[in-house]
Amino acid sequence: MKRLFSNIGWLLGGRGFNAVMSLVYLYLATHTLGLEGFGHFALIIALGQAITGFANFQTWQFIVRWGANGTGTPDNPDAKAIREATGFAIALDLISVVMGTVAAGLVILTASLWLALPEELYPLAFGYCVISLLSIRSTPTGILRLRFKFATATAAEAVQPAIRAVGAIAAVFVMPDVTGFVLAWAASEVAVAIALWIAAARVERIRLTALSLTTIPSRYGDAWAFVWSTNMSGSLTIAGKQVMILLVGTFGGAALAGGFRVAAQLGQALVSLAQTISKAIFPELVHAREGALEMARRMANIAVVAGVFAVLVALFGGRWALGVIAEEDFSAFYWAMVILSIAGAVELIGASLESLLVSAGRAGTAFLVRAVPTLLALVLLSAAIEWLGAKGAAFAVLGSSSLAVIGFYIAILNLSEIKIEVGTGSAGKGSAGPGER
Image (cartoon, rainbow, N blue to C red):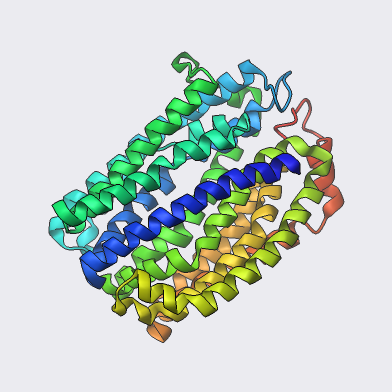
C-alpha cells in the first residue's frame, strides 16, 4: 500500500499539472474560437482520439501482466519475460497504426453523412487521426509501470500539457482558428510520445528483434483472449467519452458538442482520477496475489470520500468555473457539468473494482459489464438530447457509469473465488505465472 500511494501521488501530481495546463488551453480556445468554433475543434479531437482508442491495444497491461512472469521479482523482473512482452506489444502497436489509418480514411469519406464538421476541415481531421495513431505510447508506459517508474513516467507525460498550453498561446497570435489549435494539440501528442519512448529506453533496452505475434501466445494459452478483451474494454471507455461527443455533435450540432466537451472536461475530471488509480493499482494487484482483494476494497472506500467531495466542489463552484474559464455562452452547460461530475464520482468508485477483475484474469467479464451500459447509453442518446439537450446526454453518461459499477460489484461478490484465482491460480491453468493470474 505504501508503494501504491506513492505511485498514485506521482500520477496525481502529473494530473494536477495537466489540469492546470488544460485550463490554460481551454480558456484560450473557448475565447478565441467561440462556441461553434470550439465545437468543430472538439469534434476533430474526439474523432482522432476515438479512432486511436478503437485501434489501440492496451499494450501497457500486456507488459505488466506477462513481463511480471519469469524468475524475477516485482522490483527486478525477468529480462527475457520483459523482452518477449515488449516485442509482442510493439508488434500490436504497428497493427494499430495500419488499422487505424484505414479506419480514419473510411470515416472521413463518410463524414458528410453524419459529422457536424465543415468539409474544408476534413483533411485536418484525417491528418490529426494519423498523427494520433503514430503517437501511440501505451508500450513505453507499460515498461515504466512494470518497473514502478511512476515518477519518470509522470515527468515524461508532463511534456504533453506543457506543449499544449504553449501551442495554444502561439495559436492565439499566429493562427487563431481551429487549425491552429489542432496543430498545437497534434504537436503535444508527438512530443509526449517521444518523451515516453526515451524514458522507457533508459529503463529497459528496446529490442526490435524481439517483435513477434507468436511468442507470447505460444507461451500463454489465454493470450489472445486477454488481448481482445482489454482492447474491447478500452474501446468502450473511448465510446463512453469520445464517441459520445461525436454523437452529441451529430444529434445536436457543433455548438452543443463544444459545450458538452467543456462540461465533460470540467465535470469529469474525476474520470481522469479514476484512470490514474486504475493505472497505479493494476501492477500492484498483479503482484499482490493474496492481498489484492483487500487492496481494492481500501481504494474503493477512499474513492467514496473523494467522490463526494469532488461533486460538492462541482455543485458549488462549477458555475463560477464555467464563467471564468469559458465564454458566457458556455454557462448554459452548468447542470450538465454537475451531472457529469456525479458520473465521474461513480467511475472513481468503480476504478479499483474493474482493475481487480482484469488483474484476476477476468478481462472478458469486465468488458461485458462495461459493454451493455455503454451501448445502451449510445442507443438512447438521441432521445436523451431531444428530452433535455446537454443535460440529457449527461444523464446518459451517468446511467452508463452507474450500471457498469454496479455490474463490477456484482461480478466480485464471490470474493473467495477471486481471491483463489489471484493468489494461487485456478484449476486447469497449469503453470500459469503470477502475472497471468
